Length: 428
DNA sequence: CACACGTGGGG
DNA sequence: TCCCCAAGTGT
Image 1 (tube, rainbow, N blue to C red):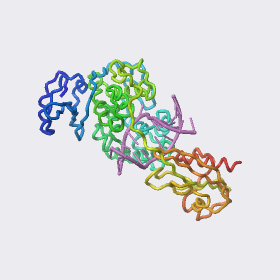
Image 2: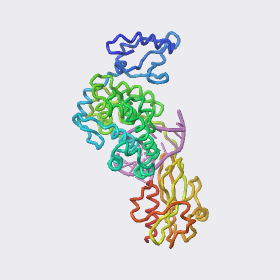
Image 3: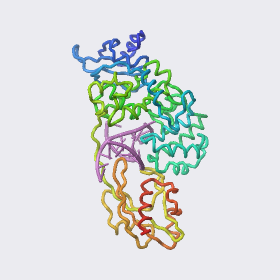
Image 4: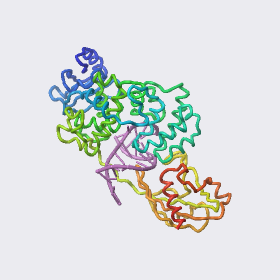
């Protein structure tokens, strides 16, 4: 156990040796281990036979399984003081970020964290303001119609976040407020390891390090971890959990977490890190080795398949378009769409596609709209038509909405693209 | 562990 | 144009 100058190590080591029998060696003088300070992670040597050290085993009571990996480099604890000083001078001003010394609102912190999952700060801004205006409190959000929440989310992507957001608000109201611990927060829908740690640190001052993409990148560089993601993810999480071992960091959990985010967003960026300006440049193993810009490495990604579909834009004389609601599960779940074909790997011939048309009329081919999802590319053929009025049967499958002010319609981006293409063709 | 799950901006 | 990927979670 690498407690700084502490003496609890041997006792805890003995206890854990019972849990996990192995050939252990005392690593308490290893400079690398000072990283963890009081954090409950044990680092020990596992020997094969009597001779050869094959791995250094990291073991933490807070993690369910043993973590076994080889560390080839040894570094000193990154000095929290340097990072926090840098943060105090260069911190970003963000809508959801309270000023120095101000108390964070758990609702605002949680809302921003959910929106920021896999989403850029720039994209979140307008949505965040709109949500706070529409749903000023967690009670207001919980009491809202789920479809109003989905509408407000439309265009931001990953719509399960919006469904979980609503469910989570209701659970928080039931609980009488947000849980103020990582374990408590983890029970909430849509809140995983990262978000639980982020809300705990930022809203409740719990000294934990939220591990997001920024922190993974920073950590992989600090320790020069060359094993590619995602295989290295657990290792990076353990290493990152020790970043706040420094007492200075644990005095300011919220600032320390956000300082890491800002460092990752500005200096320790993916492409061309500005190592010359980094407060941690002197302790960064990757910089020392000249490989900072190449980390973290990533496993090659699978090729993105192409799928095909067709969607139909039909407008009546009153300027109304026919829409429908997607199924509750799967891609764009419960969101609004134009009527159309299923999406499949084979292109649709016109005749084949028209079988799925909502009305029988003269359709104009508006060409293809390309849309890239996370795991496949979609090529949509858009067909458009004007009719005098909708039959009852046509409307039965969906609902009508005014085509004017398409931007006001709360639609996924894909459908917005299709409607714009259809309208453009009809106008010419 | 692998995969489903959106979108827009930057190099 | 194309590829990368951003404050991840659930299954």
